[in-house]
Length: 579
Image 1 (cartoon, one colour):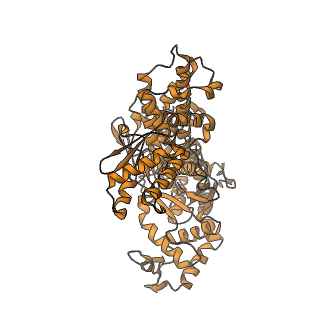
Image 2: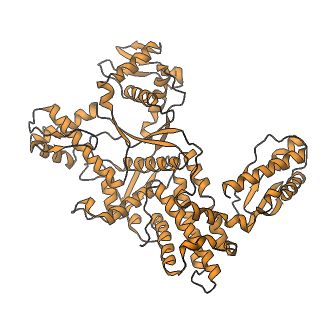
Image 3: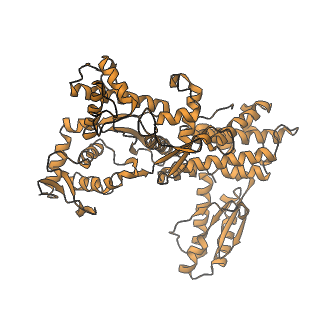
């Protein structure tokens, strides 16, 4: 039911409980949607909650509560019937006026329907993708991009001010490996040669970087300064700077193809150059939570629930990777982000305890449990019935760009960005698929399914429902501007009522997805709404002689199309009007 209807019914039950018990009611009234629509529109278990403390028979108490609610004047146009079931469940059937009210509200609010200001004035930083600039983005990064962007959008629907951030790990061993790999290529070596470095990256992209470096080309990341290749294969620092800028620019193209934008790119290297890492280390040492052993500096992280103490500075020098993470999160907190969500792969699970321990040891006022983490499992890619493990371009994994191209039928011999329709199709499939399961479950991405134009393809199924509705509207010969006068009380067929019940739950789905940091709820909901529409389409006709009923059905379908488009937009997926 709509929020105002829910509030009215809750207030009525609160008053009923006070009257039935003859004392002020201080509990919580819970209203739920029955799994079986034949049980009514709303269920309440208040009688069973109150029966024991009130020493009353729950069914008798349920009956008494029901009578008070039915007698409440505020419920006169809201409740049609109340039934008692089982040990004391109160099942409520809403009036037709209450059921159809959602259509008028959707027509009035349009793209704003379902949104809430429950978290207005609150800010959240969501960090996601955060790939090392050592190669193209892989499908794991793609899952992060889809999850993070959808999570940001759904939290915005609840009033949050969202800041999206990408943290570049542009310091450390992997960056040095990138530089030596490009250097080897620049000197004419290739994978398999005797002198080829054992730990080097083998993808074709390394050869491309080396060629452009030798040619003196200029590269630039979206938020960085231009870097020009010096052509000197002996200048490892020049190679490193060029390679990092080159790959950051490549990742910018991946993100553009995926339709993901960030508010800020934060460089790990800046934490060192600005002294933030040393400041964090000094804070941990000053707290008395560190100790020296074996020539290394340790954090006594077991004091904060970790399973063992952790090395901060290795005996041979250099900090372990969680130390700059601690410094980075202190900066997040100092920038005013009291709520921070990190989306990372499950291989980062061990990071959580040590980063949180380090933040507590720094004693700068950061609350326990900061930051929040959403960990996702990896993606298996299937194509032609076979698992795809290697991309020639990347050398060892399937890239996001591969997945988008394959899923959209992009001609890879032509520039990707010059094929907008295929690119949109691929992006839509990848985004929808990668948020269609809980983050902590493994996912098999079937490229053949993403290309299929059938009900088995979930994104096609939802988008086709939206396009089919617009096809109906184009032929309905109804003035859409006059739908506010539609007699919605005529919507009484079973398939119409099912659509109404599904429509009205959209605001609750958005709220649940935001609270649980789980955008897959929206993907599930969209399939449910599309299914309810397809059932309606097979059961009822819109182009009929009864103008009043036709107008009511058109109003209902406009509302369904609006909510489908709203939900797809949250997931970053297009809502085509023709397919």
